[in-house]
Length: 195
Image (cartoon, rainbow, N blue to C red; front, side, top):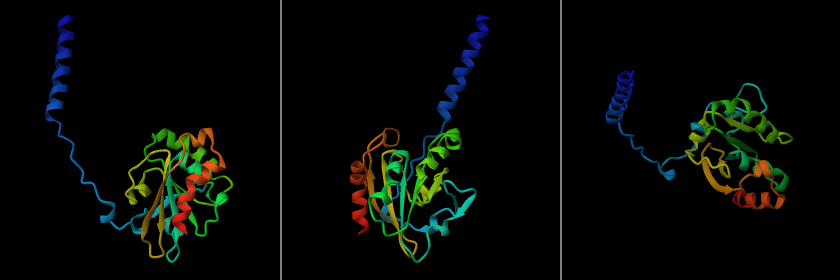
């Protein structure tokens, strides 16, 4: 019996050792400079999911050529604050939000997040993109997934996209709430860029 245990342990050690010794090292990825690539709606996915709607929506319905659109990408805490934008400020252009949930586990994406996002969009007319696979975020070359940050882009009439602001909200804004003054302070710099 002892010989069998030793044989099993030796075999496991050999397999782990061979795997470790023959594994290829990670390939270094070339980091792209944001200024080297022109962001554009042509890199957006052709169809997207909108919170509260069944099926998919054509991206061209949200980003219409010939008109400017504000695009705000965020996670749960930051989206809770960003949804207050039309209540606190007179936003003159249409805007779209993107729920950046691509790193959430699949079961959370299917069961918990849809309900939370529907609560966030209740009572507002702003469409929210449910970016489950991260295609929208990747098309913007965005790799920051912090829950307290939001990223604002201006989609121009010609389809070009320009990053205009990175904002921060307090941690726990969704669960613990926030005051109107905290929301206004977080969103005011964004409004200044739009003037």
